[in-house]
Length: 159
Image (cartoon, rainbow, N blue to C red; front, side, top):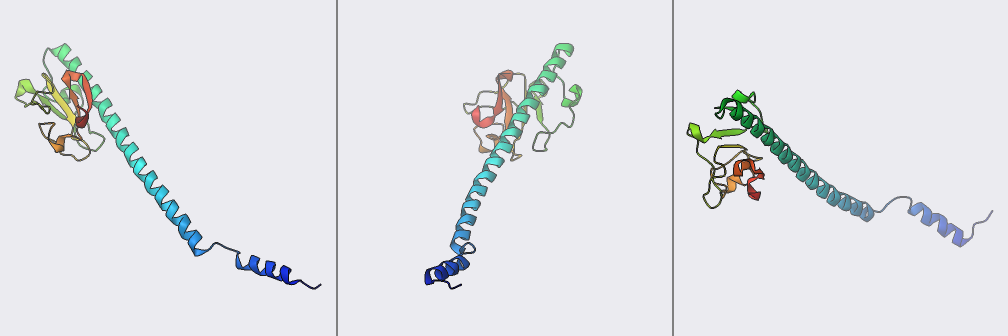
Protein backbone atom coordinates (compact mmCIF):
# COMPACT_ATOMS: atom_id res chain seq x y z
CA UNK A 1 0.00 0.00 0.00
CA UNK A 2 1.40 3.33 -1.01
CA UNK A 3 1.24 6.37 1.20
CA UNK A 4 0.46 9.70 -0.26
CA UNK A 5 2.60 12.73 0.52
CA UNK A 6 -0.08 14.21 2.79
CA UNK A 7 -0.35 10.96 4.74
CA UNK A 8 3.44 10.86 5.20
CA UNK A 9 3.46 14.47 6.49
CA UNK A 10 0.73 13.67 8.99
CA UNK A 11 2.61 10.62 10.24
CA UNK A 12 5.82 12.66 10.66
CA UNK A 13 4.08 15.53 12.45
CA UNK A 14 2.50 13.07 14.88
CA UNK A 15 5.86 11.52 15.61
CA UNK A 16 7.48 14.93 16.14
CA UNK A 17 4.74 16.09 18.57
CA UNK A 18 4.62 13.05 20.82
CA UNK A 19 5.44 15.12 23.99
CA UNK A 20 5.37 18.64 25.41
CA UNK A 21 7.77 21.34 24.38
CA UNK A 22 10.22 22.82 26.85
CA UNK A 23 8.28 26.11 26.86
CA UNK A 24 5.05 24.32 27.75
CA UNK A 25 6.74 22.46 30.62
CA UNK A 26 8.30 25.67 31.95
CA UNK A 27 4.95 27.46 31.80
CA UNK A 28 3.32 24.66 33.81
CA UNK A 29 6.13 24.79 36.38
CA UNK A 30 5.86 28.57 36.75
CA UNK A 31 2.08 28.46 37.20
CA UNK A 32 2.42 25.58 39.70
CA UNK A 33 5.07 27.52 41.64
CA UNK A 34 2.91 30.63 41.87
CA UNK A 35 -0.10 28.62 43.05
CA UNK A 36 2.03 26.76 45.62
CA UNK A 37 3.47 29.99 47.04
CA UNK A 38 -0.02 31.49 47.41
CA UNK A 39 -1.28 28.30 49.07
CA UNK A 40 1.65 28.11 51.49
CA UNK A 41 1.27 31.72 52.60
CA UNK A 42 -2.46 31.20 53.11
CA UNK A 43 -1.85 28.05 55.17
CA UNK A 44 0.65 29.91 57.37
CA UNK A 45 -1.86 32.71 57.91
CA UNK A 46 -4.59 30.21 58.81
CA UNK A 47 -2.31 28.40 61.27
CA UNK A 48 -1.44 31.71 62.94
CA UNK A 49 -5.13 32.62 63.20
CA UNK A 50 -5.84 29.22 64.79
CA UNK A 51 -3.05 29.73 67.33
CA UNK A 52 -4.42 33.16 68.21
CA UNK A 53 -7.92 31.70 68.64
CA UNK A 54 -6.52 28.98 70.92
CA UNK A 55 -4.68 31.58 73.01
CA UNK A 56 -7.88 33.61 73.36
CA UNK A 57 -9.72 30.49 74.53
CA UNK A 58 -6.94 29.72 77.00
CA UNK A 59 -7.05 33.28 78.36
CA UNK A 60 -10.82 33.04 78.74
CA UNK A 61 -10.44 29.79 80.72
CA UNK A 62 -7.59 31.17 82.85
CA UNK A 63 -9.59 34.31 83.62
CA UNK A 64 -12.57 32.21 84.67
CA UNK A 65 -10.36 30.09 86.94
CA UNK A 66 -8.83 33.21 88.49
CA UNK A 67 -12.28 34.78 89.01
CA UNK A 68 -13.49 31.54 90.60
CA UNK A 69 -10.54 31.55 92.99
CA UNK A 70 -11.26 35.21 93.81
CA UNK A 71 -14.89 34.40 94.60
CA UNK A 72 -13.93 31.51 96.88
CA UNK A 73 -10.88 32.97 98.64
CA UNK A 74 -11.73 36.71 98.49
CA UNK A 75 -8.25 37.35 97.05
CA UNK A 76 -6.53 36.84 93.72
CA UNK A 77 -4.29 33.79 93.41
CA UNK A 78 -0.58 34.64 93.74
CA UNK A 79 0.29 32.42 90.77
CA UNK A 80 -1.31 30.22 88.13
CA UNK A 81 -0.23 27.20 90.19
CA UNK A 82 -2.89 28.17 92.73
CA UNK A 83 -5.59 27.56 90.10
CA UNK A 84 -3.93 24.31 88.93
CA UNK A 85 -2.56 25.92 85.76
CA UNK A 86 1.17 25.92 86.56
CA UNK A 87 3.30 25.42 83.48
CA UNK A 88 0.46 26.01 81.03
CA UNK A 89 1.99 26.97 77.68
CA UNK A 90 0.61 29.24 75.00
CA UNK A 91 0.28 27.97 71.40
CA UNK A 92 3.84 29.15 70.67
CA UNK A 93 5.31 27.04 73.49
CA UNK A 94 5.89 29.74 76.11
CA UNK A 95 4.22 30.14 79.52
CA UNK A 96 1.40 32.62 79.95
CA UNK A 97 2.31 35.77 81.90
CA UNK A 98 0.20 36.44 84.99
CA UNK A 99 0.66 39.69 86.95
CA UNK A 100 -1.31 40.63 90.07
CA UNK A 101 -1.20 44.35 90.87
CA UNK A 102 -2.04 43.85 94.57
CA UNK A 103 1.22 41.87 94.89
CA UNK A 104 3.38 44.62 93.36
CA UNK A 105 2.93 43.88 89.65
CA UNK A 106 3.02 46.68 87.09
CA UNK A 107 -0.03 46.98 84.83
CA UNK A 108 0.27 47.16 81.07
CA UNK A 109 -0.93 50.33 79.38
CA UNK A 110 -2.61 51.21 76.10
CA UNK A 111 -1.42 53.81 73.59
CA UNK A 112 -2.72 56.62 75.83
CA UNK A 113 -1.00 55.37 79.00
CA UNK A 114 -4.22 54.02 80.52
CA UNK A 115 -4.00 50.71 82.40
CA UNK A 116 -5.47 47.78 80.48
CA UNK A 117 -6.86 46.16 83.63
CA UNK A 118 -7.45 47.20 87.23
CA UNK A 119 -7.22 43.76 88.86
CA UNK A 120 -4.64 41.59 87.05
CA UNK A 121 -2.99 41.07 83.69
CA UNK A 122 -2.75 37.76 81.92
CA UNK A 123 -1.34 37.45 78.43
CA UNK A 124 0.73 35.53 75.91
CA UNK A 125 3.86 37.12 74.44
CA UNK A 126 2.63 36.02 71.01
CA UNK A 127 4.55 34.54 68.09
CA UNK A 128 7.72 36.58 68.51
CA UNK A 129 8.06 35.87 72.25
CA UNK A 130 8.75 39.55 72.99
CA UNK A 131 6.57 41.99 74.86
CA UNK A 132 6.44 45.41 76.47
CA UNK A 133 4.36 46.97 79.21
CA UNK A 134 3.11 49.57 76.70
CA UNK A 135 0.89 48.32 73.89
CA UNK A 136 2.16 51.20 71.77
CA UNK A 137 5.47 49.32 71.52
CA UNK A 138 5.99 47.17 68.41
CA UNK A 139 7.01 44.23 70.62
CA UNK A 140 3.54 44.12 72.21
CA UNK A 141 1.40 44.31 69.07
CA UNK A 142 1.37 40.55 68.50
CA UNK A 143 0.65 39.71 72.16
CA UNK A 144 -2.65 38.00 72.91
CA UNK A 145 -4.06 39.66 75.99
CA UNK A 146 -6.92 40.42 78.32
CA UNK A 147 -8.04 44.04 78.59
CA UNK A 148 -10.84 46.09 80.14
CA UNK A 149 -10.95 43.70 83.11
CA UNK A 150 -11.95 40.84 80.84
CA UNK A 151 -14.09 42.84 78.42
CA UNK A 152 -11.50 42.38 75.67
CA UNK A 153 -9.57 39.28 74.65
CA UNK A 154 -7.43 39.44 71.51
CA UNK A 155 -4.24 40.67 69.88
CA UNK A 156 -2.59 43.81 71.16
CA UNK A 157 -2.77 45.34 67.70
CA UNK A 158 -6.59 45.23 67.86
CA UNK A 159 -6.91 46.83 71.30
